[in-house]
Image (cartoon, rainbow, N blue to C red):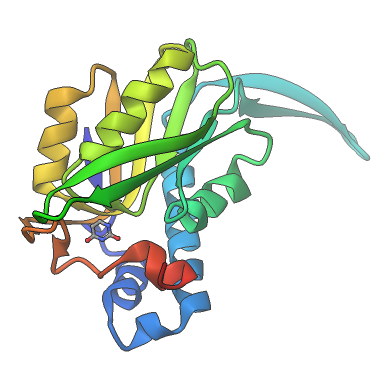
Length: 214
Ligand code: URA
C-alpha cells in the first residue's frame, strides 16, 4: 500500500512546499520542524491502522470508557537524516521502543555507490508493528538493506515506511525486494532519479539540510 500524504488537500502541502523550496530550506530549524510535523501526521494516520482495546478510567466525576492502543509500534530510523521525521513519530508514539541504524552511501571512484551499514541497535521485532523513517526513498537500496538487516531481530507483523519524498523507482525496488508486509507513507512522490541517485525535483540532500554538510 502506497499513501501519498499530499494527495488530499491538507497542511502537508504547505510543509512539503517549504521542505522543497531552496530559499526556505536555508532555515535549518524550519526544515527539521517541517519534517517533524510530517512525522506527526504520518504517526496519526498510521495510528488508525493499529489495534485498540477498551480501557476504563475514573474521572473526578465518574467512570469513562476509553479506547487505548493495544501495543505501541517499534520506531526505527536511519541515521542521521531520519532523526527529524523520527522525532515526529516519537511525539505521538511516546511509549514506543526505538531502533537506530546507520546506513550511508559509500561512493566509488566510478560514480557508483554501495550501501554501508554500521551501527545497529534494535529490540526484538517478532510480530511487532515496525515504523521505519527515512526522509528520502530514492533508489530503495538502503531501505531494502536496512529491512534485510532488521528482520534478523525478528519478523515484524507489518512494516510502515515513512518518508518525505518517495521516488517511484525506489517504491518499486522496495516492493520487489523486501520480503515483508509493507506500507509506504510519503509526503510526496516524484518520478525521476539522477545518475547519482538524487530524487528530481526532490529537495536536495536531506541530511545536509537538516544537520549540515558532512
Ligand atoms: N538522499 C537525499 O538526501 N536526497 C536524495 O535526493 C536522495 C537521497
